Image (cartoon, helix red, strand yellow):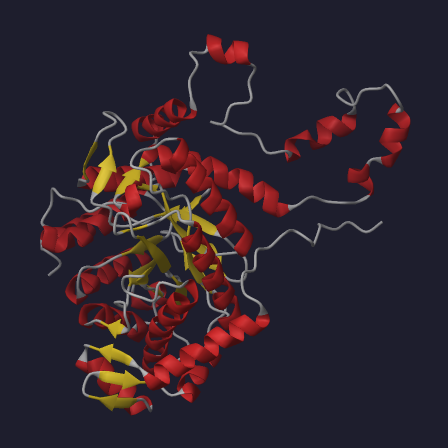
Length: 477
């Protein structure tokens, strides 16, 4: 019998083929009829010269230009680590998890108090990502309040690249700071061409809902497209606030915002590496807050993942995040649901692991427990082999009724194929009691502090560290 993996591993698809086509055609109509407001004159000129219709700052994009841009779609982006080695292949259903970006607060793992983030927290999050096996990339997970706020994004990049070898998804406050961060990445990569061929970073920037390509975000998009560097260009649309209250309406508007950016990127550099996705979040009408763990947000993200597959674009997705104000049972529940959903629908670059408090706070406990849940979910989505060896018909016949399999060579050979937890408890009640009745939150806190106290990431070469430090100290100049 031929060895094979099961091919019927469940995959979550929200949209039918007809619905995918309908959303695409509706997006074309929004771009043709309504268009987008473009606040950067250089972008307006590029779009006009490319065949768009321009009236003051409103740009309307014809369908043929969208279709042309989509034909240039690179179906994969290979992200590299700090050493230039391929690390993530953003394509099809390959799923990679990482932290989120720019939370103003942190839950201090030593005091269990929420406080403003400082630069040391950015370093610590990067150390944790470097240590945790299921974390594939890092975002800064904080806004350092103890450095010059005008260039805190530059400090963030230095902190991340010094404390993990894994790829970096970063934000930049403005074009000048972006240029500095790219310059720092070129120092590490060994030059502009090497960074382009082996990108260790991708920029995250956003359109402004509804239907606005803002000046600073588009300046950054243009800069990255000119250098053929990866960019995540995704909206943070709030249904009922900055977009229609219905999921379908939000999807169409958000899709139009992203596609407008993609057309611009392609007019600058055909086939520019572009990562699709982002947030279509509902507003909780009782609090006026966006809900990070609502069923509607999970549905919308799954639908956007379907659209990413339809367009053959890598998908920027969500997981490991919660609306809970602290790390508790709610945070674990919502994180696990997100991780399962994102894994089943095949998002590629899955961020926000460790978020709580509606995306305003980062929790180390949430991060380390989510890392364990990701391992468990990966085991589910891998399926299992069905072949002569695993079906074990001869062994079953040999053992027969009333026998035992524990002492068989077959058990010794295969038991390690099962997934084993680190933090999740499977021990008997009596042993658990004897070990202090530690709940998951307690063990997660101990694990987080162990990492921060004991893990020493492989350092960046001293000459590179000094060059980066010099750039940062000069304020990016």
